[in-house]
Length: 276
Ligand code: ATR
Image 1 (cartoon, protein in one colour):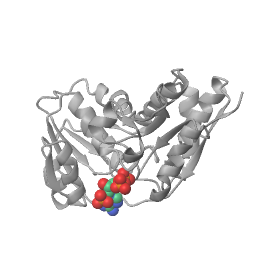
Image 2 (image 1 turned 90 degrees about the horizontal axis):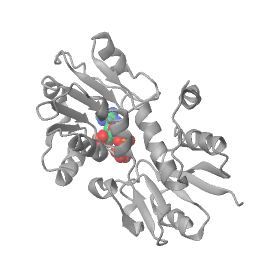
Image 3 (image 1 turned 60 degrees about the vertical axis):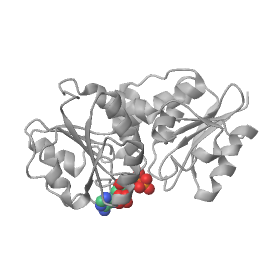
């Protein structure tokens, strides 16, 4: 049988571990397929997506900065892709139409929000830092879990205000005020690129926090960002983004291949070894 080709579009892509994940599963389940990085410019999106129609590609993942930009080139968006205007998985549906799905929300639920057993979602306040590609999915996952008090702070205010157009119940705070906003928060989520390996980091110290604070970092490379390390030392409960990454990949894989691939220690170790 002809090898099925999959890939992830975005820019830059050199740090993406999606090929490791999917190629691990293709091997494990003996599927004749391969998954590669497809780094493209904005004006190449249509051409690449149409390769699914011609059969050259079987499925595409989408990452920053194109999760919203792909939507005009699709025939349909389903489920959470509709609610978030954010697509990370593309395939051809039964009717032969190009369909965009969002599996990030699922990843966030499995990797983070479902673990907030002790949190009172009605009463607790959440501060989301960043207004990039993954933020709408984070807000949607929090909303599904029942959180109502959500603030969002972003260096570029306009991008946070744009997200508020979709989720009118959120509060937008200016970047210079995030430390003050953090004082009364039960959960802080880093959805910026601050803390990424070889990248910039937070200048804010977040000196005053609630004793029960939970900190979630969407970043998993490094495994522990500087913020995770600092908060851990202060006995804050922390999570990184590795599980979210694994679960969103699991969901994409099962949509394309009709097999729900296993997440196990061997896979986690394989991914982690690439981080070091
Ligand atoms: P994109 O914004 O293209 O979707 P992303 O990786 O999803 O890319 O998001 C990057 C996030 O990190 C953004 O919220 C970005 O803030 P801006 O919207 O102001 O660009 C944030 N970010 C990146 N570098 C930052 C820095 N030095 N200080 C504060 N926020 C930063």
